[in-house]
Image (cartoon, rainbow, N blue to C red; front, top):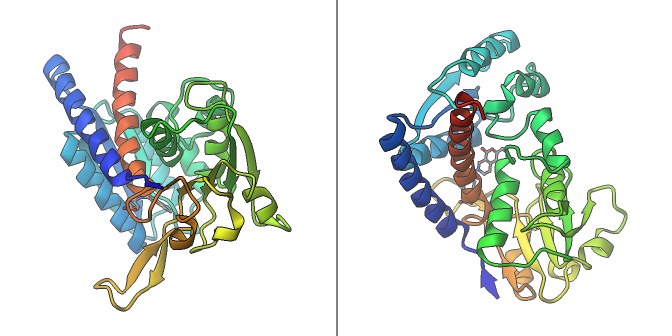
Length: 297
Ligand code: BQF
């Protein structure tokens, strides 16, 4: 059994990006830029935004962070996004989700220029993803494919079972693995909470992607021997023995499932750090695409 070390791979990717960004700076005198917009005080969101900002600093990507009050109006947020859509220093615009209830996430996502949508959530980019065109991949699915690639885990012809159907993880990762491409070309099943007997599906998986959002939901009886397990869950559960009063737990019961798995991602330190690394990767790719556009390609 191999534990997939997402923390280590993410670090490698950040080091590779640091080199590439330094190359851009030498060649063009500019670096990629990212703006992160946080509305309200969700504690987890604050942590995520801080991690993204620190990661930008580490690789030399220019970053701005906007912290807006909970009461921010939808129209105000849209106007801000439009300002960044035409800001040449900025190649990526990220609006941290979830947003307060009075703001429509769909409207906000659609206000972001598809050319700066480094989260890959804009319907144009998701549409391009589904038809296999070059686009920004959502960061968590991109991180999952990158982990499979770097651990040389074959996907072609394998049965991937995705549990969860969110627009951010389940739907895009299923579509990416379905593409007739290197690092994909899998047989993909998507299942979810409406299944009467989830085990019937999960037990047939060569590769199981758990993106459910419930702590330790996947147990050993639900998987076959030798399964590759990708745990996307980031659940905060109370733990009085820790300084913060909580710990992070995945959607998979790591202790028991790891005994049957050939590969498994831990939580923390698995898919989570890759999400941040791929955000930087997308920002770098966005900068390069903007150069190509300027030169009329
Ligand atoms: C780790 C996210 C749900 C909803 C909105 C490292 C992150 C998490 C875990 C992280 C996530 C989850 C992010 C670890 C960003 C991943 O060491 O295991 C990093 O920062 N994430 C987000 O921005 O929005 C979310 C999950």
